[in-house]
Length: 224
Image 1 (cartoon, rainbow, N blue to C red):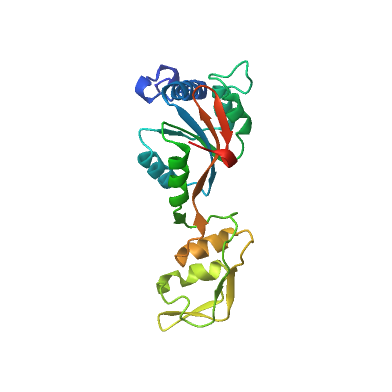
Image 2: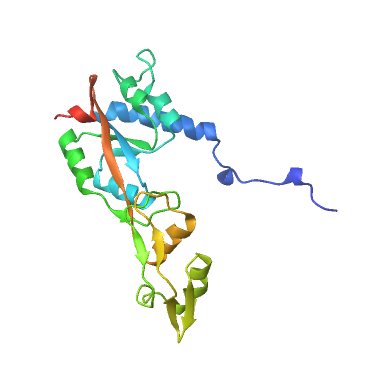
């Protein structure tokens, strides 16, 4: 007789946390950070990558960088003066939009801005990103000389007019991979990666600054 699924035992250690529990915990963490640290920065992000964000977290310790859904961060801070968790933090909440994060730290605005001005690593651009530079491959074997001949079929699938001769990839005509300012297609992004061309610069910028006690300044007027 087959076992009933109803009698199946599930270890509590394998039960995933409910979305509401995770959300509530994150809200509590943000409010605790408002109490613990003297300053909070609203940061904009471009071309965010998990490995780069991890470096930011390491470099800015013991500060805390929180990346969460915008609505969760707004709810935690409070969007009005009546429901804000600290004086004037609702002004930060009002500015939260797009790709952004909250940085809690005791470091001065000058130090934080200096760090982000210097830390701008680059990575491979993804599909949908805007090309920074034009990339044109000239006819012949030189443009694809660094690639193994085993990828020739893949190159043809990506739209390149190629042919394999004497274990070398021949480009049968000039080929434009991308043009500056245009959106990258999935094929163009994959082609740039094969060519080891990185065009995505990771940046974080200070949009606003809040200091315990209620002082608030936008990014155009940050002072220590």
